[in-house]
Length: 201
Image (cartoon, rainbow, N blue to C red; front, top):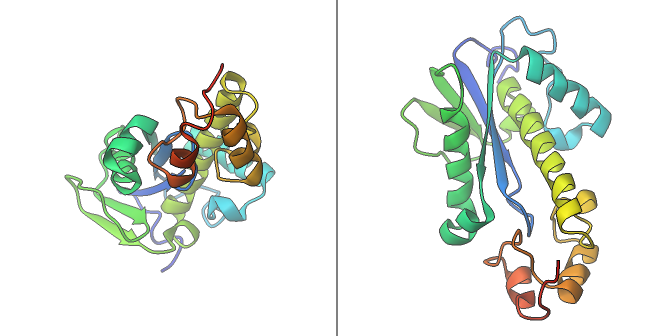
């Protein structure tokens, strides 16, 4: 699939970040690009970009995307619905937040949320389709910034460093400090720690 052909008027790319962490929301972004965007061809899967390059592209998108929106699903929704359904909910919210209604939505992966407009799932789209790659960058920057803020409210867990993923530092902190309100209690590592220590702010 040509990276430039998919960056056409009326197309929105959607991607999410945060399915695997033990803490924090899942964040989805929807991005529509201008066909004459000078950065076309430079958007890539956010995980394959350096932090500096990702930040440059994020700020470019904030000012030059044709339309962009963020959708989130909370920890409570993740625990109530399961992570897949919460992810699809975040994607729906991101698409609904666009100031321009897209004619087509392209989504990274193999699962489609229910949308009132045509949509297509593309495996590996975050590194092959420019609007999806742009959404990947937006979603990661927004979630990483949120986790750095949450680190100030819930110190000791290393959230700013690992962004809520199940690192050894995070698991050890859970065992020692207990489960906070931003931890996903439906996830097995958190469930095992749920009563091991009462969280003290």
